[in-house]
Structure formats: C-alpha cells, structure tokens
Image (cartoon, rainbow, N blue to C red; front, side):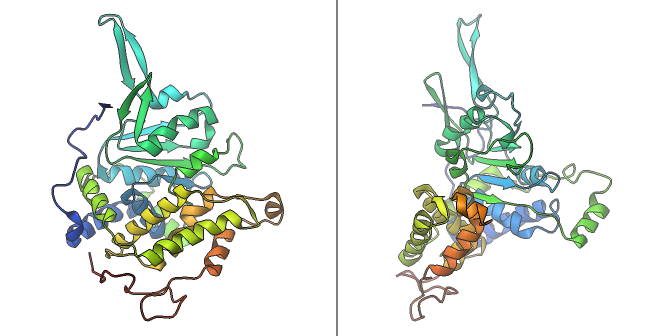
Length: 355
C-alpha cells in the first residue's frame, strides 16, 4: 500500500498515554474551542459538537440556509489546527478526479504519475456539497469510510487526522441534489448553525464589521496534539448498560412507523464514538447516558427517511428521534431506579475517574 502525506511531521502514534493527562487534554481543547468561538459568535453548542466529531474521528455535515456561517465554521475549525487543509467548491461540473486525483502520462519518465486531488489533506472542507452530482459526491465514499483512495488499482492512504467538514444548503433550494443515503451515513453528525441572537449579531457587527475574522486566526494546536487526543478518547470507558442503551435507540428507528429507513449499524458505532468524545470533553474518562441523549439527534436524524405520510403530517426526523428518546428506558447507575439518566458514575465494574 502506497502512503501519501504532504505533511510527514503530522500524525503517527502518540508518544505517551495521553488519556492520563487530563490537564493537557483540557488545555488543547479549550484553546481550539476559544479560537473557533472567536469567529462564530453565540454558537457554543455548535462549536462543541464540531470538536466532538473531530475527536471521535468522524466527519461533520453542516446544513443551513446561506449566510449563517457554515463555511466560516468549517474554516475556523481548520485554521485553528496546524495541519494541511484543502477546500473543494462543489459545482455541477466538478469531476470525481478533481477530488481524488488522476494519473497523468509523463513523457520524460514514460510512465504514469499520480497527481493527488484535494482529498489529500488532514481537514477537507467541502463547500455546498449538494450542488455536485451524485457521481461526484460518490468520490468521497471510500476516503470517508476507509481513509484511503484507490486510483487505477493502486491504494493511497490519507494523512492522520483526517476529517471532512461539508456544508450544504437545504434540498428545497434551487440547484441542489439530495445526498445519497450512503453519503449521509458516512457523516457522523449533522449540525445547523441557525441565525444568531440579536446580541450576538450586534457583537458580530462591532468586532467583524470591517475585517474578516479569519484573517488574524492563528493555529492554537498541532495535528499531533489532535492525534493524541483521539487516542485518549478511544480509551474512554463505556459500560455495558450504556452500550445497550445506544443499541436500543438505533434499533427503535428501524421499526418506527413514521420511518421508511432507520439508522444503520454504522450509526450505532458513530453514536458510541461520539459519546466517548463528549465524555472526554466534559472531563471524564467514563460515559453517562446523558452523553448519548445529548448526541442522539445530531448523530441519527440525518440518516433517517420519513414515510410519505409522516412528511404530509410535517413530521421531521428530529422529532422522531426525540420521541424515541422519551420512550426508551434509560439505564440506571448502581443503586438508582431505572430511568434516572443523570448518573455520576456507577455503571459497570470500573470506578469513575476524572480525566
């Protein structure tokens, strides 16, 4: 297998067990969070979810109407980390080879030379991804799932960390294509930025009215810091009752009468990984049911397809997931009644610890 990485100094195995260094984890995360929140005014939960997806080794889909800061959020996250970044503007005439790369005949060497596409970066920003055809969108499938690209029978590994941050406009807008189910399922979470509050919008005018907020944004973390944080997140403990709770939530989407397509087993895995990352961001190395509940809508809703009758009744996927959360029994910690859901540890055999 051929390896292609344009920044060889990034990535690789961590030097030490990072999961035991809570101060370092907190410091790095807080620096990145503060950097992004300095650009995206009044949206701390959106920034937190973006960091959760990054540390969970996932990909983020940002969906909203034009002008609310979708691309700004993606760029701010990318520029806050000292790593390779590429931006792809998706248009109807974009070709798959523009994303993955192409082999070109070199007359001097009398051999084919591979020219890497924009996907060969640690953070890839896909702007307005649903303005390209499904054929072009499918060029991302292998890279997002397997973190590699196969061209002319040769496989090239992508650098680490690797994250796709894609923006899209609502499907009802002119000139958009709906993302295929296989494409949506590869995004760990979907987030909507939404309009800012009046106070946040006024502050935005005062601070950013004369200059772009991205111009002075400097990296506050290195790529190898993120790799170490990812290793720490992998070690977060999730007790068996909480794992079963995640499985029950996903299974309920497959039998719900308002859905014609439920969530996949990949969704269960993404929910577990995001839960671990959320626990780490909260300063814990063990997960709680609250972590699962807080992420269920963002991780599951974009994968679901409502029935025609549910669409006529204006039932959204988000509403269905909220209903499933209310109906599914929440696991209780040791010594607490079922459905308590706000435990402080006590799940399984391991004692709770703090990162």
